[in-house]
Image (cartoon, rainbow, N blue to C red; front, side):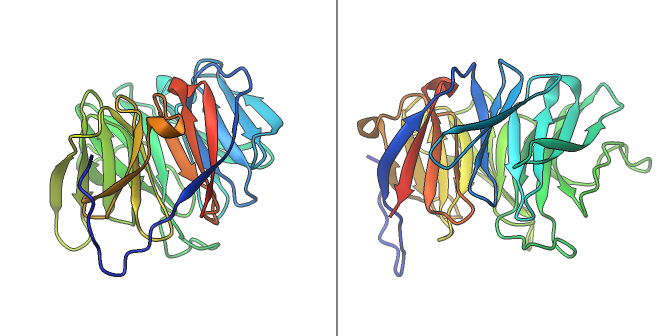
Length: 286
């Protein structure tokens, strides 16, 4: 088992299985909660965005022109969908499934792979960055801030790069803890990487023996970080400096190739995309 730490004052959530759902999914690769408690899913294989209610009842569907890979919904209830195969990102109203804007990178060497909303950025984002895009350009990647809902995927002429914080070029999913700290899942690796720009640059690898093929990351309202291990059929809970707290969910809770996860905005439910994107497990947070 993973190391279990005795952290003074630490409060940990428990999870009670509620239900499971599937709607003839092709392959779900991204999941996020709206401020109304609905759940938005990216069906990569079928090129659909699917909206369900908190218990998984089908509400609506939106077909998109290319494979949607990742989704994040900000505290302002604005959704961002990445379409990496056409180098684009959509900004949407997630509860109405209405596309507000589409941005496409002009350069063939640039694409948007993943996206992460910053937790608790407030209903008005005037002075805060509500989310970051994981943008790849040539052989590098950066966490690119979406300021005031503005997305510009054109490199700065002075530097030939986008104005974001560099992260590992192999990133496939990442989670912004705040405006300068990122947990990243890397292609082909069984560890995660933490990059911190808050006070001084620091980057380190978190190697966990009981985790194989990490695929997605989220956090709860106690500041704990959750990582899905697709190859190890489990969910790890970490501190924000990458120390293992415990493994709250594993194969005994029907974890089978979990690929994505998220909490509702009020943290009363945890959703885990299971079976390599074929179903979704719903847990009550207790």
